[in-house]
Image 1 (cartoon, helix red, strand yellow):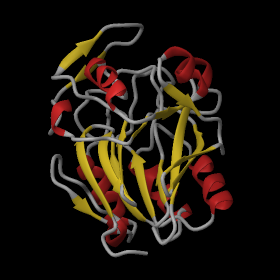
Image 2: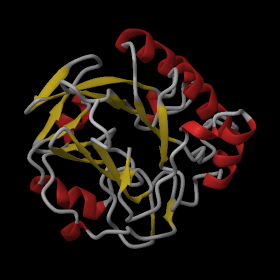
Image 3: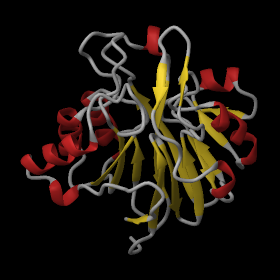
Image 4: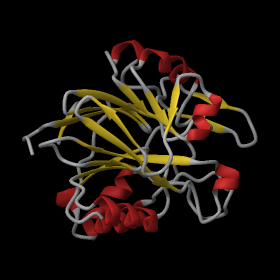
Amino acid sequence: MTENSVTLTLIGGPTAIIEYAGVRLLTDPTFDAPRSYDGGIALHKLSGPALAADQVGEIDAVLLSHDQHPDNLDEAGRAFLPRAGAVLSTPEAAGRVDGVTGLAPWQTHRLGDVEVTAVPALHGPEGAEELSGTVTGFVLSAPGEPVLYVSGDNASVEVVTAIAERIGRIDLAVLFAGAANVGRFGDADLTLNARTAVAAARELGDAVIVPVHAEGWHHFSETRERLVREFGYAGLAVRLRVPEPGVPLAL
């Protein structure tokens, strides 16, 4: 593993630039200014991006966990997609959005020396797909590089366990946290909360944990500060690296 071979720059919410093995990746593009989104369930964006879409530079691929919710792909993010060398997402997203390459769970796509493997994600409790839609996570690997897991909007610790068992060692994990909850499933969250993020971290061995999707939206029902406390009380603070928007974080 190369020291500081991975850099993550948080843009806001679930959106981050990941520089990995010479490839620049962007997760779930959200570049809109603060606003509300009407629909079956209204969503409210509270803060704008740390970097505008025209400031992120060249992107080799977008890792899009799903396209159906504006907190993961907003209007400016959608307009950004054609600028990326590739857009990897679910097969359902590929059917709805031009230029998207759909990956079924465990299917792999190569970007230079980097293998991107789609992995399962569950956007809520068991059976959530009918209302929340299909979501994917990703695992990145390359010769001599750490194995990196990007969870996407996954709420299930059991899914993380299954991924860890199948992939083997995972060195870095970007976990979408924030306890997203719009009331659709009562008290059951749509993403990891502080408690389940700790449980997921335990399933990931000694992987370094980087939380994203934890600020900037009204329906993120827990703060990053709570997440940090929970990891501290669990004795896992040494494994947690919290990015600040716009500031590159070497991992």
